[in-house]
Image (tube, rainbow, N blue to C red; front, top):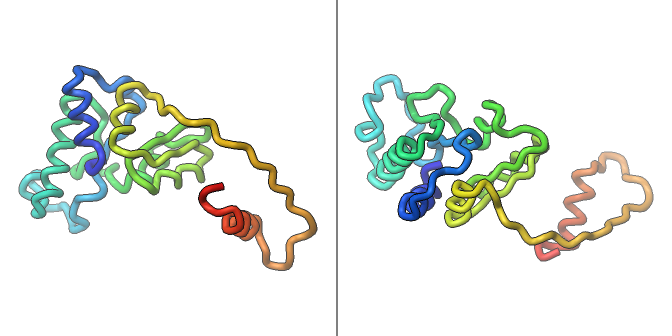
Amino acid sequence: HEVTSPQAFEGLAQAGRPVRRPDCTLVTVDHNIPTTTRKKMRDTASFIEEEQSRAQVLALEANVAQFGLAYFGMADKRQGVVHIIGPEQGFTVPGSTCVCGDSHTATHGAFGALAFGIGTSEVEHVLATSTLPQVKAKNMLVAIEGELGVGVTAKDVILHICGVIGTAG
């Protein structure tokens, strides 16, 4: 989307690199666009009043054109929050890997995808290579003994485990 991509596209352009898999790249605006009706929208430049937001959206539109990517812009009925339209448009499917420059990307895991929220430099790397280097995670065995009490669900169990272990593992 428009917030984390300008620097990534700039890096690609400076290196003379294309987007490796345009067919696997979904581009939309969702963070910096007005939520008001677009019935009278003439163009992006006149519709978005806030200067920084307008600049980010215009930069995204220019980058999409330069790199030949599918784009769900403000005039496209498919445009929406990236974490909703990914599944709606068939980009997020079970067994796929999904990355986006946004911390909410992990929600795509609900669809059986391996999903990572990544930073701007990683966005550039993924666009250029369609890869995301990762350090192998440590394994941990957690044994649950006994029976769950009335009203206790699997979600309660995992939230408790996460609370005990903490974010550092």
